[in-house]
Image (cartoon, rainbow, N blue to C red; front, side, top):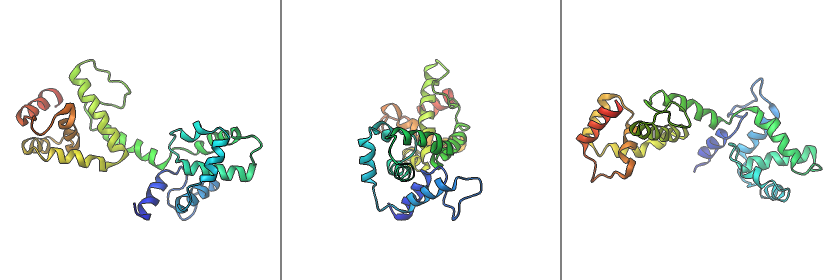
Length: 216
């Protein structure tokens, strides 16, 4: 990963800083500054702060997947300890983190995910963002499941579509049908890859017939 790519990925994990030269009006300039410092100072892994948090019994907090990387949590812990001290142990920092930092909003990555998810769900025929498929029909559940996988993968990164597009390219008849139908190529590639299908077992005419009968 290049330095530029690393910077882009770190900015995505921020809640306040979004690559600006100065803190935008209405944003918390303290948090903006902390995050900006973290984005461009990649020369430390914050080992000392991580060990301190471990000694304070904050392993659960450190491992919680809330969108903030551990090294950024460690930097925030460093700043909290600098200004407040550690008289309250780790509890005070965890409360500050939840009440002050998380309340700043979602990370740029989480916001991007939600935006992409909304766009992709509109292209689905079965999955509408639910946690459980509302249809008991096995075919509906099948397509709902793979639409959900597709939406989640592409919401995280559109690059995830490349491998499924390549799968579809192996099947010219299906490829042409998908192009004419306006279906997402990567979604159909995922469907071809599902259920243990392989290039030796996919009957293109039967697969197209299944799409027409049960999906379109």
